[in-house]
Image (cartoon, rainbow, N blue to C red):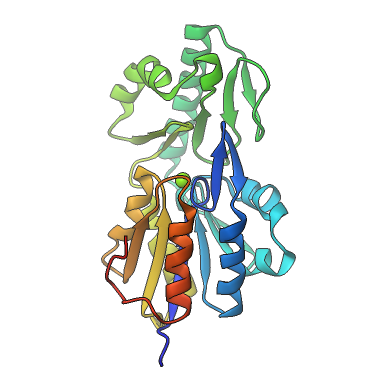
Length: 260
Ligand SMILES: [Mg+2]
């Protein structure tokens, strides 16, 4: 039996982790799968909106060293990457960087004023009512604190004038846990294309399998440049992803067809 050459692309939050409140907790079933994939020597990319530092310092805490040095990361939707230990920051036009900075300041000011909030920049969930900003190198991530009524819906409503004004230059991607503000055209499709170009420059890999749980993850399967089979695995049903990975690793996966 010939097992096709394959590669794996994973979103992190909600895919390799599950949520308990707003905390992202590592899914051990899938971590075990990552270890199996590594033993088969198939490439693994984490394609995430998180910053690379968080992936390395928080997520990797739960993984063994061999696995953490094996996996590659496309962080901040591909704006920052780490391939075989080499870090790269994507160059953006000066104007884009300035617009992002301006919108960052405006958004924080508007949200803080509207709800009388103090702004806290932290990887960890603050234990009080505040505007929680997740540290990023390039993009802006506003985290929600639903317990205090600080939800995505509320923040989007307050930010509406800014979103309207900058919608041609920036993307505002939201989910129940956060609002991500990033340059237009930066998305997981581009991140995946960059990842595959780095891992497989000679196009030897027959198929890539991508897994995600949110709107933004659908982009992973949209590339026309490579063969990527995307699986949308809604939150908290990680055994589904586990079953697909098992099938791929044992050569039982009917390539290209959807199992879910
Ligand atoms: Mg996710």
